[in-house]
Length: 463
Ligand code: C2O
Ligand code: CU
Image (tube, rainbow, N blue to C red; front, side):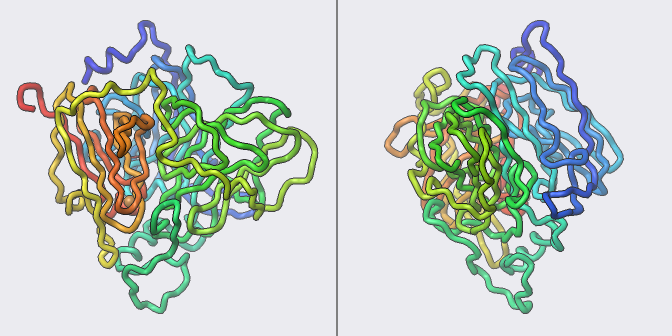
């Protein structure tokens, strides 16, 4: 591990330092004030930014009444900095501090959040942008756009919702269901997601911490090419994203470049990131994120000129136009993994039981699972087989995998991929980052209810 880390550091690497304070906070979401947990006094928390080859050193203080950790989502970093209590570190106790320090191996759009309980579904999340000094940067301006489904402090908490789901009761947004349990009752559905669109009903949807009635404004000039780095930090919601009067050219997903693909709208699963480039027209345009299959939306305004802002419920036609399909994207040549017969394959059968609210991989919840062995240097094939009626954004820690399409073509490089009901997604990775790494559904309720497993590098000679 130390050896792998040494290879990532540029000689004479710059050390970028930052500090984070996780703590209870009162936050104004735009006329709506909530008590929640946040990094500092804002959501999203402070964006961290550095360049490839830099070392990031972040001092984290835990001012929460509960233990926490910070996971650096999508990064191929040293294993002991991955932020998973019980696997890569001890939890950071209330009142305690710790420092994360690691080299940044790949450029792109990443983010961070706790890896404890349902804390991610509060306000504990923020972007992490890794710049590439070599990148041509064919754009004039850029904005980070963080999407989030919100219920904390609205009379409910994420822990309360999970407790209710565990009783086999659907979450209807806090409405009294008369105490009767209705296992299997659907709260949302979407054709684009192939079935159930979520388990949880959220009263609010945020873009950069604001509700649609009090949106943030992203200001630029007409004619400018703008890069949007879109991050879904939601707990249980995929977002359909479109910009009124514009098409979106997708250039990266999960940090890694793709052959550019131009569409009207994108579906972004929890934990996924899409970078898009647009050439802006003149006026005020709604950047809308609809909670797919649930209704409700978040919005930001893109402003290049004068004009009245659109209403909070505006529905640009692009939302119903050409939606990015999973097989539209190909990894850029430079990041495509060479085709190799995998040295090892693991099938991950995704299962669930709504009556007991248990979500499983290969029939087991995480606490009963056995680790999936991996040998350093191998090409490892993961096959995510969805046997449930709901989509699962499956995430792998510490690696970016090559999605192999069903027809055998190469898709994008990703660390989080939506697996629809009855679908199998094949993901190949090169095992070049020794350690113990989680793979799990990025629906925070599914992960907490068991849909996690561990990839475990075997010591050399025992693989
Ligand atoms: Cu974004 Cu295991 O997490
Ligand atoms: Cu899931």
